[in-house]
View: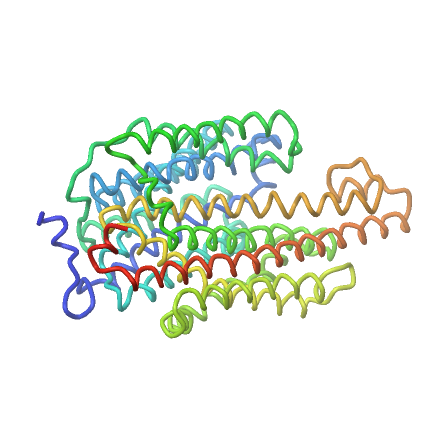
Length: 508
């Protein structure tokens, strides 16, 4: 056994002796990365006036980060497994801090876009190594609880970006939303170097350079197509061309991985029903959450007339519910008591119920916030119990020496599910809206501005609200049905594992 693997062997007390302190450090690093997925949205007016940014510039400032991060997740996870997770975690923090400094001091849109892309490289390394380290330092008895806390930080970062950004911009100029990352990155880097044990694949496989290139091209192109869809239209050349490139790239990646002796991603994982069930469930949970928040933001601002910060505050109960259930240990206890398949059914039923409540009780131009609040709490409860269960199922179905790749898969699923939710539910919204009113405008504000009178504006608002309700119901049906399928696959995989001997189970 090498020194790097021995450093992470669980102790008799349940794992690495400083495991909870290490978890706090990596969650701090994770939170910083996730906040930067959404924090820039509140700075758009400042960037437009101070950097003279165009709409295209703003889109690239936002998308450069997520495109680079999502495209590199699998490659980053594979590199962490091969070269050392602690080493890559430290490099990720350094790159993220340097990118944040460059972004905060940028004096042109080109510089800011380039800095955001550099931050995306660091973010990809952090997203994969943090979860891989959790898998190494906790044993089976505490791993679900640790992953639940890790997942809580992900939800908090997703929801907290606009709120934290709004507070910063009330007191400082826009550059501070990036410069505030630097002291956090420095503290986390020092703590990682001092506390986190090194671990890597003891077999030291050769790097799969072609696989890394194909996966990066494929994922980047697919995510770009999903991001571009709402703006350019789903059948436009700007969407279909990158989508085709992405699908061809991912197809070539799959074929290469099946034939290379040292694959970056072992395609035989997809024969594992536990792995497939967890993947399907993970995509659909993020599908429901990402698509719903995309719709809710529009409902609160366009239909009910709230300012961005006010809308963010009214969506906060979703994140608060997730944080409350996981910090108190209720979420992990449910997983441990019920088992993974029943927990997935319970969690995704709650998410579906939340979407239904938002649609039926909180939807429409006269819907109450109480119905929306109930839906957000139900969704938060569902995500709190189902997400950790499925993340644990994904990671436990992959050999420990491939933990970085497993974390890369988990992160890729989150990016894909979020984009898919926005794309599908957004398409349902647009189709319903277009069926109810005949308008040529591409957005609700533009349609309202072109309306001939108050009665027509009311009709347009009602049609948009009806489209929101329909899309939320479609999301609820998809999440609930997907939860049943995912749970059935996970249950079948558990029964198969019980029938196998330990040697057969490892081989499977």
